[in-house]
Image (tube, rainbow, N blue to C red; front, side, top):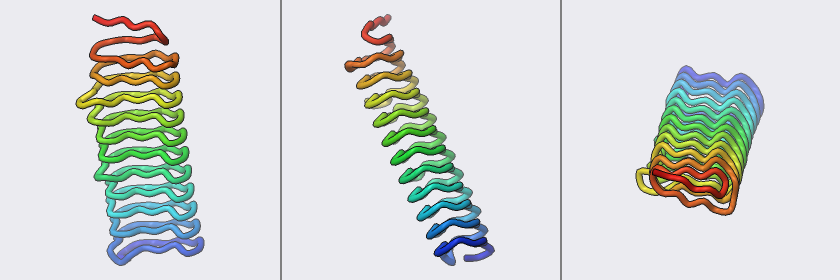
Amino acid sequence: AGYSFIGGGKGNTGTTTSTFSSIVGGDSNFHNISSHSFIGGGRNNTVKSSVQASILGGAENTLDTANSSFIGSGVYNVISGSSTQSIIVGGQENLVSVSDNSFIGSGYDNSINSSSYAIILGGTHNTISNFSNSSVIGGGVYNSITGSNNYLSVISGGKNNAIIKECGFIGGGGGGGYLGPYLTNFGNTVTGR
């Protein structure tokens, strides 16, 4: 790998098409067709087809066509699909795909798909998708912000809540609040304009 560095560890490799990239340590980490990228340690982490991308540690984490993106730690976390400047701090099986400038803090099986400037702080099985740009899920379980061009929506937490149109807000609770445009739900109370 041109002008690249492998400091130590075991079984770490980089292809000749990876340039100016570093693997500091760990086990079986891999750089492939990447430039100016970094893997700190961990096991079986991969930076592929990415520029200025970094994985600090963890196991089985992947940056694939994820320029200027970052995975801190955790297991089986993925940023892919031409997602740029996106971050997964940790957790397990979290995914950012085709989403620029998006963020997952932690949790399990959370995903941001085709939604830029989206945030999931934590929780389990939460989803932001289908061009729900600039939307936020704070935490909870099985919450979703979906629908075509569903932007500027927020679910603070709770369980089984969903927003299917733009500019909705669910404060918490459970039992499935399905909201349309410009509506607000605090638990089971729905108000709107």
